[in-house]
Length: 110
Image 1 (spheres, rainbow, N blue to C red):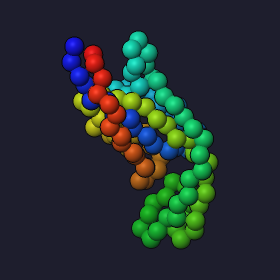
Image 2: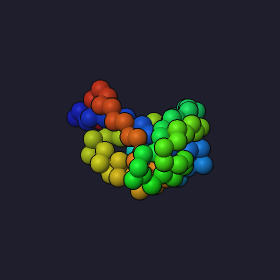
Image 3: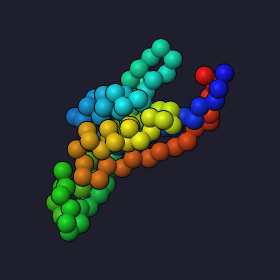
Image 4: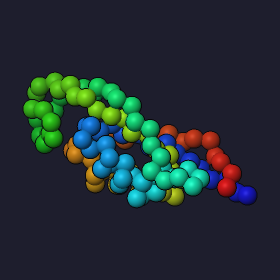
């Protein structure tokens, strides 16, 4: 047996993009647990942001606070897939600057 580092990758997305982003993250190596793939947890949330001058906002207008319903996607991935998963989020996410949180979890035996 050997230990591998596992990370949890979290990103909020608008409701209509949840499946697209989960698929992209899965194809990049996230969400694999035992004999299961595409394992994800989503939680409904509310996001707040205000586009500033120079922003090319997917939703909202420069200088106006925007409140949107989003879903927080959480998926795990091994360390060797982390960069690919983050790149997949950036490619499939509709936001110009998606929020991406990365948490190191306890190492697991394989």
